[in-house]
Length: 330
Figure 1 (cartoon, rainbow, N blue to C red):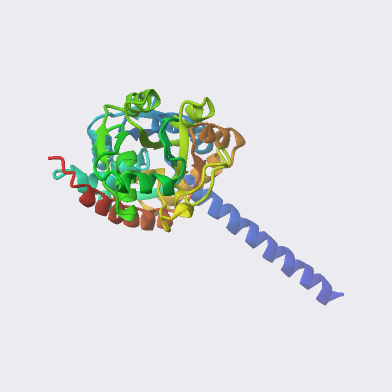
Figure 2 (tube, helix red, strand yellow):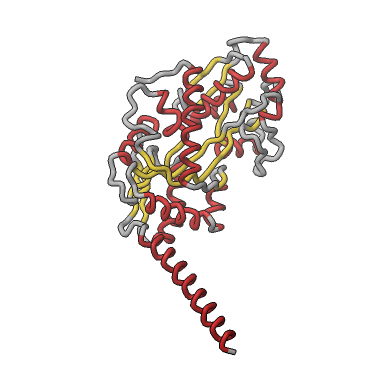
């Protein structure tokens, strides 16, 4: 009897200890979160995809951390102004950058005098979304697949035009990577923004271009554009008939646009971990998942370590693409 009672006491004590330990860990996580309003800085104007995602996250994240979260648009220089603003902010978790592929992976090689270093000036917090590009064409363009497109371009070296929303953006360099892998030579026609480029592809002034799924899908469904391929390795359930370019003869082709949260370098690891946990909780809500899908992306929340390794790989990958394109901006 005594042994049985002693065992019950020991088990009760052990259970209480575990519960207190869990509560202590939870309290520590909460205490590492900012105790003042949080600012999400983006380097682009209101209304673009990154702005929409930031505003959706601001609402969901504010509920998780118990503080107001505001979006601060610092547009200019392909995101450089916003990134520099976060670089020089206090590393206390109250200022975050919602960074883009172009801003963080393309700019380091594209610009000779970039006022920030992606890999040194920021603490990765979490990648939060990933979205494919569609290679779309005017319906009258003869090729209907990537294989046909490559053959068509090889028969007309340097004479097939493609549009993009500007020099050095993801959609432009996605085509540069395709040219390199396929051994073809195309003629780039840059526009001041993808809407103007899409309009001219639909109008037949330029035959083909890459652009995010969010901006092209409605025109594909309306019959104003046709799809030659999708840039990701996986099909999208939003347009399941779009065949991955990697499955059409360009093995290994895999390009997705992405967004991720970064804090200023020097932000305490415990604060980064607490922010990551809050972002994960926010991303688990059906409302936010639906909102991100409406932008053509998918929620992909990673750990700080995984996001850091991903950034290293992306900077190297896109640095090579920029070098291959011959682009350089002073």
